Image (cartoon, rainbow, N blue to C red; front, side, top):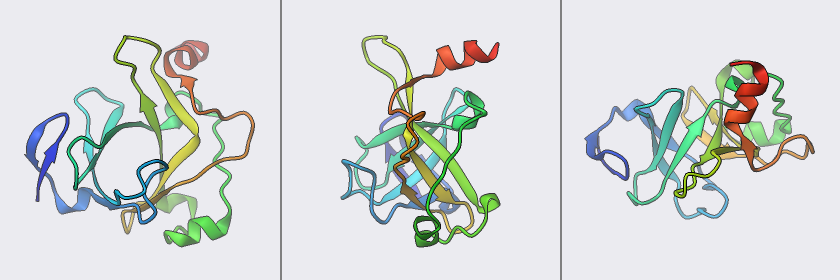
Length: 146
């Protein structure tokens, strides 16, 4: 399928990369169809809206810089997107990269949880006070000695 993207222009993507977020992301509830694209720089990914090329998010696997990250989500919420075991879930954090060269942060309080089999997802809100909306990715990596 062809998708007009913010980062790469009009590109061809595999249908397997298509992702539905029935409730949308917080603040973007009207956008439910996305594609998941590998970014040029690993370990990042792009979550690109199929309906509006200006709606795109950078994602990262939060366990890469916070191996102690715990995603405690009620089973009812997971059942909404058909997740029945941890193996069927992909977890991403939305990354903020300020245009002024400020600190790159990841939202650990509101992870994106995706059923890897059905490619259906939802944004969860964690109540654990350890997880904030802005975790400094570089500082966390440095703390780990990477």
